[in-house]
Amino acid sequence: MITKTHLTDLLEELRLVEYDAAQVKDFPGYAALLDAMLNNIGDANPHLRDMLIYRTFCEFTTRGLLDSEQWRIILARALDQEHLFYCIGAQESDSVFTRSFSALLLPLALYQNDQRPWLSADQITSIGETVISYINQEKDFRGYVPDKGWAHAPAHIADAIAALATTKRIISDHLTQSLFDSCLALIINPGEVFVAKEGDRIASAVAALIESSTLDPQYVITKLNDIQDIANSWAPDNFPISFNRHINYTNFLMTLYFQLQGVSVGSEILSTITELLSGS
Image 1 (cartoon, rainbow, N blue to C red):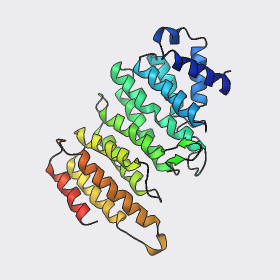
Image 2: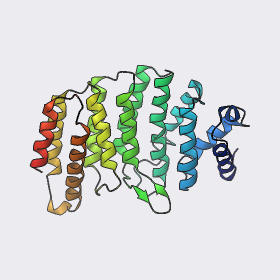
Image 3: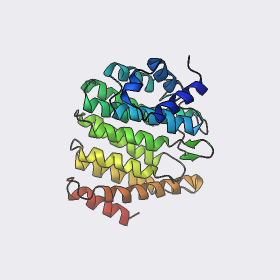
Image 4: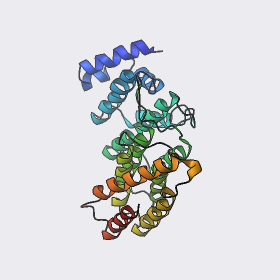
């Protein structure tokens, strides 16, 4: 078993050789290394978690150093109860790092699948459904945590949704609509104002879903109007949560408006956003 200290040393060594393919493949205990990376993906040390483990997964992916069987193992673990759903529902807990950085493995898996397909359409649908289930249960919306780095759960799962929207495999209209609904829930559910560009990342995911052409513009318009009613419902006994929700939604709409410029979505959605902003 690779200890945390040994893992840090190994990953630093790989970084020094710039993830050279020949040296990585000949690396002693390659399978054990991947296992240790998954075991420690949510470590509270930001250098190990973000700069070493996550960066190594990115480098291995873009350099094609992981085969389909390795990715099947990684993806199955990333989506399990000890990773994406680890202590789900907990707030102000270090467990959020395991959940949020497991979420970041999903875009890498989908990128790898676009390069060399290994996932079926049903498996991609299952990933989407798991993402939706996760969003419905996540309660920790912190951005940057002092001394521990980025938690950023809403932003990371939004990146997974954007990857699902842009995958070369066509996903169903129903799943696209459900992912869109989940993005809106990410905007409305938190009780605090997003301050670390979480709304921008969610808007990027929504723009990708709209651009995928499997999302009915009228569905988008109806849902945006429905959420506007919630965002504008300021209850005195729910202050400042209701006010924070309104700020998040308004900022999201402004970002979405500019991200949809030049996208062939038709003028109706842009006109609706303009009307909603003028009335917010």
